[in-house]
Length: 286
Image (cartoon, rainbow, N blue to C red; front, side, top):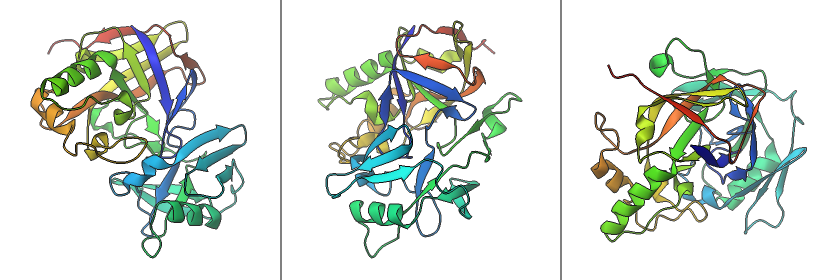
């Protein structure tokens, strides 16, 4: 089995960046969900509430995060580490309360303007502090300690090309449009196993790089997978959610599932590359 895609999403729910090589930190890939957009209540905002977030392009320069939008006269340039002394905000992401650093009034004005919310809730861009730790819910771990940044809940999301092909075959049979992998916003895409075999995986490893990932929870999907990740528009509002429910990709669980959430077991400071071969260990039968 080999890696065919590596992706990061520097700002939660904005566009992603495809990589050839991804550096691994304690929280996941470097810069993945390192920033987040919040509202006036300091709660996280995603494409669930603001589909137009998909239209914001994201780049990383050596010393700055760059955001661009067709309706913005100038890009937003956020220099790394410029506000380490800024007061910290208490922000909310799902059930977690975290500390965050506000990236300032200019970022707030830019985001509020391009995302079409004048007169409504003011948007702000916040960054995950280097010294902050957000622990992953231990309910699906095995006594392990793992952390993440502003991701929904886990350090990595792993998906399979074979599973996408099976989903698209079912959509095609129904006369519905096929969907690209970008709908699922994965970090790691793999090729080489049977469709939905990933639900049986326990660990993925790259021995040469000294990297081991533990797959700990199926990823339950929301309406974001119905939205085009370049426009924010949902061409067929109920798909592929409806078809995933029908396929029962996690037979013992209700809902739409695609991909597996993973944690880092070994390999902090190492790298993964597109084309890397991976070994798989599967869960033992109960």
